[in-house]
Length: 212
Ligand SMILES: Nc1ncnc2c1ncn2[C@@H]1O[C@H](COP(=O)(O)OP(=O)(O)O)[C@@H](O)[C@H]1O
Ligand SMILES: [Mg+2]
Image 1 (cartoon, helix red, strand yellow):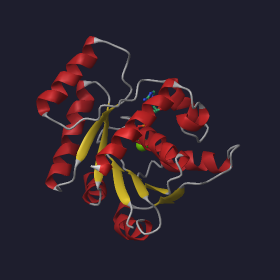
Image 2 (image 1 turned 90 degrees about the horizontal axis):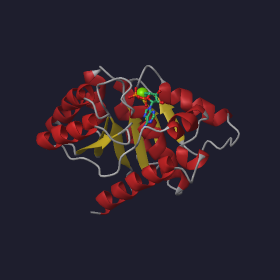
Image 3 (image 1 turned 180 degrees about the vertical axis):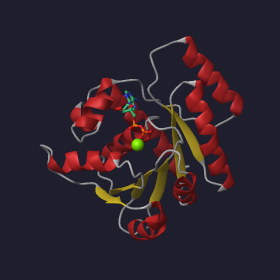
Image 4 (image 1 turned 45 degrees about the horizontal axis):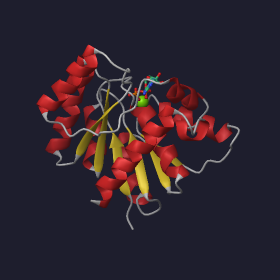
């Protein structure tokens, strides 16, 4: 079996890429899946989280991890897809060529987007890249506040653009920040939290998508 490759991409820095990736990774690992993470972002946020995880109280580095330059991604993926079930690739902002390589190899591109005009504008570049490479992409709303006119306007704008959007969303929650700071996912740190439930819902949706 060859692993699925999921690339998390979004041109905007601070959009929530790395957060979304670690939440999905830890939820998949908790279900017993063999997961590999690849960090091609020179800012190395995912690498930092992984370091916390390896030195943390749990001390169970059950996630495979590699940090590679974008130019080496192809070789790394060729190796990893034979060794695990799912590979998650974290990408840098403002780096078209690096992101392009990661999107080209993706079975699915996840585009985290906060409900704001700036995030939606930045997402357009990622959706255009995915379309050019003929890769399926899904917008995932993140840092969604409980309510507000801006949120409704953002939803309407994305609907107007016709981007496929996950029904499951990540709220603006401290559980994501706090679990990240411990090298964990919300599912591990606070399994009964609203955040954990959101991640489970997203995973269930991806499962259904992959089962067809
Ligand atoms: N759903 C969320 N709720 C609360 N804070 C979030 C959420 N997603 C991301 N953040 C915070 O936003 C900041 C940027 O997130 P990050 O995942 O590093 O973005 P990116 O990888 O796109 O640069 C971090 O401080 C992170 O803790
Ligand atoms: Mg990041």
